[in-house]
Length: 437
Ligand code: NCD
Ligand code: ZN
Image (cartoon, rainbow, N blue to C red; front, side, top):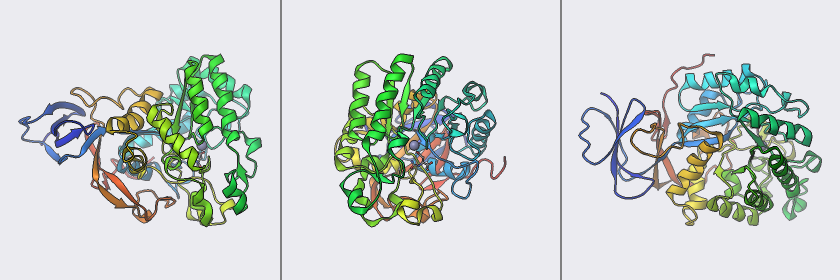
C-alpha cells in the first residue's frame, strides 16, 4: 500500500466534496475519481480539511518538569488538537537560553515525530532580564531557533529590549514579548476590577500589559525591527496594536482561546484552574479580542498551553501557579467563539490558526495552501459533532483544563504531518521513538 487518500473532504469547508491523494509527504492530486486503488483511506465524509495548525506559544515542560508534560505527551496533545507545528517556550529548567537546550528540544520533537517542535530561545540569560542570551548561536543550531521570548517573564528593561530588537533584526528572528510591567503586578493574581476587589484578590491592571505593548511598538519602530505580542488580553492592547500597524510598525499579536471565551466572573469559585497570566479580563475585553481577531488586528490564535501539577493548581488561588491547558481544546473554542457567531468562516480559521502563525515565524512548510505539490500538513475537522471535555481523557500529563465537563462544538478527527497520520478519531499515533534522549 502506498500513499493516503482522503475521500469526500470539503477543502476550507467550501464547494463540493473532493478526494485528496497524498504520497511521499506531499499532496499529489485533488479531485473526484482519482483512480487511486492502493492507498490507506481516510473517509472525510463531508468534513472540513484545513492546513495543519501552528501554535506559537506552547509550554512542554521538558526539560525539568516532566511530571507535568513532556515533549512526547505534549506532542500527542498537539496532534490531537490538529497541530502540525508548535513553538515550545523557553521557561524550562534548565532555561532554553543555550543551544544545548534548544537543539535537544528540536531533536527530541523529531524523534517523537508527532508534530514539529520548534524551540523558542530565551532573550536573556536565565530569563532574568539582565543580559542577552546567545541568540545567534541558538539560531545557528540544528534547532534553528527563529523565535526568542522570555515568556513567563517580561523583558522589562527597555534598554535590554531595545538591544534584543536590534540584534533580532540582523539575525532575521522574532522577539515575542510577554507584556507585563512587573512593578504594576507585584503580588497580583487576578484582573484588577470589581470582581477581584470583591473577592479580595490582588489586581493585575490592564495598564501593566498595555504600557509594555506601547513601549515595545515604539522600540520596534525605532529599531526597524519586528515585535510579536504574546497573549493579548485587553481592549487597550487591541487599540495599541491597531495604531502601531496603522503607523507601519512591524508588530503582530496573538490571542489565546481562553481569553476569547472566559472572563473574570469565572473567579467567583476561587478555583485556581482559572488563574492564568495575563488574567481573565472582562466581557468587554473578550468581545474586543474576538472582533480584533476576526478583523486581523490580532493576527493569530496561540494556545499558551501551560500544564501544571495538581499540587500547584489544587490549592489556594493566590498560591497556585498561573496557566491552563489549551492544545486539545483550541479548535473547539475558536468554533464556539468565532465560527458559530459568524465572525469567522473556515478560511478564517485556516488564517488565524495556521497561515498567519506560520508567516509570523517564517515557516515555509506550514500554513500552505491546500494544493497539489504542497506539503501534506493537514487537519480534518468534524464541524457537526459536540464533545464533553474530561480532564482525565486528555493526552496531557496534567489536568488543568478550565473546560472540564463543558460540552464544546467541533472536533479534530485526523491530523497529518508530511502525509503521516499523527492523530485519528481521538487517538494519537504512537511516537516514532519512545523515551530516548
Ligand atoms: C505560563 C506558564 O505556566 O509557563 N503561564 C501562564 O499563566 N500563561 C507562562 C506564560 O505564558 O506567561
Ligand atoms: Zn506569557
